[in-house]
Image 1: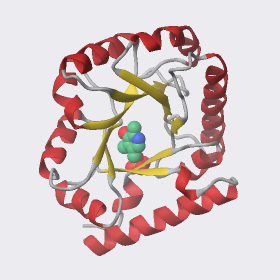
Image 2: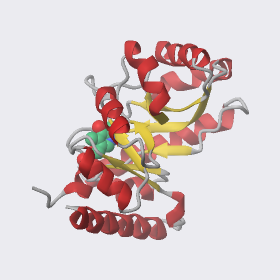
Image 3: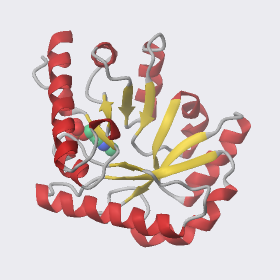
Image 4: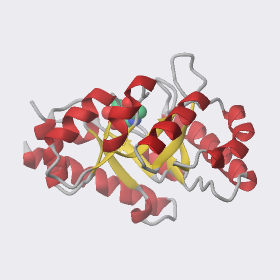
Length: 231
Ligand SMILES: *Cc1c(COP(=O)(O)O)cnc(C)c1O
C-alpha cells in the first residue's frame, strides 16, 4: 500500500511540475493538497510518509478524526468542504487553511470564534464559478462589494480564492472556468484593501489540475489520482 501511494504521489508531482513548466511557472509555486476523504488514516499516513504534508478533507468530522489519528505527524490540514456554523469551534484548532469560506455570516462567525480561541485563521473565499445551485460559495459579483469589510475581521487572513469546475465539465470548459477565477482574482486584487492579499488560487482536482495550473492555480486539491490501484 505504501509503495502504491508513493508511486502515485510521484507521478502526480511530476505532472504538476510539467504543467507548471508548460505555463512558464516554477513547480514550487504549486502546492499539492492530498485529499484523503476516500481513504482511512493508514492511507493518509502513507501519503505523509511519502512526502506530502498538506492533507485535505471535505467533511469536518473526518478532518477531526484523521487529525487525531495522525497527530504525531507533521501535517498541515486543509478543510475544503462546507463548514456548518456549529462545527467551527471544534474544527478551527486543527485547520491550517480553510478553503471554503462561503458566505458573509460564515466569515463573521469564523472571526468571532477565532477571537475566542485567540487564533488567526487563514482562509480562502470559495467562488461558485459554475453557478450550480447545489454548490456553496459566493457568486463572482458578490465579492467586490465585500472587500471593504474584510479588514474588519481582525482574526482572519484572506489569502485568495477557491473554486471547482462545474460537474462533468470537459477539460476546455474547466479551463475556461479557471481562467474566469483568475481574472476575477486579478480584478479584485486591483481594488482590494492592502490587508487583503488574494495571492492564492485553490483550483484543480484529479481530472483537471493541469488546466488549473495553466490558469494560475497555486494549490491543487487531488484525491482519487493518489489512491488509485489500492484494494
Ligand atoms: C473530493 C474533492 C477534491 C478531490 O477530488 P478528486 O477528483 O478525487 O481529486 C477536491 N476538492 C474538493 C472540494 C473535493 O470535495
